[in-house]
Image (cartoon, rainbow, N blue to C red; front, side, top):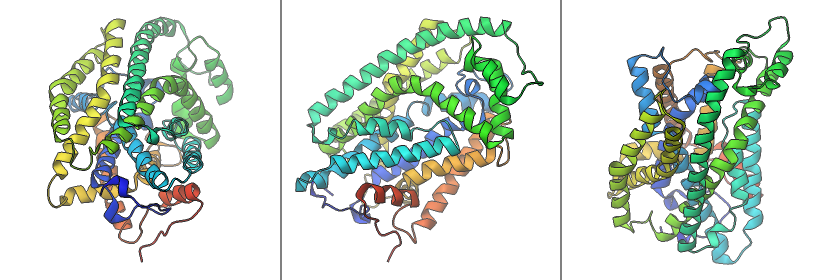
Length: 432
């Protein structure tokens, strides 16, 4: 389908109008994202962001740690962001074709996404990305009206800002962590059992180390694994806020750049059998530049003896080449789908991609059940092999569920709510 020929509608995109590559890519992205996020579901914050493989991991654990760092970390959330930008471009086309206002529709869509994000954080997990998408998305409503050249320039600016900030934060973080480690040696290592949860939390947050205090990990484990809900809620908000003020300046420009890049790719015909040379070039760049550089970045970051400068270099490489890897994955998927009939496996994965929002939040609900106090309580009791196996099992379960669900329904339950809030007109949910 030529995107410019899309007809204005307030319901879900017709099956015949969908671009298979978007759904397949989204389905794969949900696997890569969960490989990365599994540690954040299962471990205290400072352990989850640790780039050095824990000493108690098996050889398989070390291999999985390397695999996730090289092939997944910093590659799949930019891919998801690029696809989000493509969705913005597709959504804006009918309004542009009929000269209808689009801004109010898009703002409602982002406000609903922000609500999903807030509920996500409140009820389940502090690693939410939806609220950041909503904030950046509200500022991006004007992007679909820009020319491809302008969009590429904006993307380049956004990626450059993100890379500079990543290098700076990497340098400061390395130096800061060295100082923190020296302070941690002198700080108390256990909580005062005679005090309440909130008294201990106040003491930790007002200490020199704050959330980097080793005792904060104890509080995270106590609240998230053992409950109650109020303790877990407070910890989630502290976790989110401590990351948000780093995430917004660091990830915000990159997410904006990915949105702009996604719209540029859509407008240029990248998804419609055009630009074959660009596709081939992206695949070559992925294997010859991005993948070797990610390997170098991993070797740097996983070494306990790396200097602050090398740590900054590692973050710089990941920031610059992560989106390039995302484009490489996208080009590889396009090449896979470049045949008369979409492969069965691709169609199967695409069903999950069609339920992207429902799938993303379902991953959280399922992982929370395994890790948190209201479920099995595996928090802080898993290994890399265990989390990897659980990741694959959850992804396969969601693929099966999505395929069964779409036999009876046209759109996911959360997608239905999202579209209803966007257009103020509920689309048909069940298949006729």
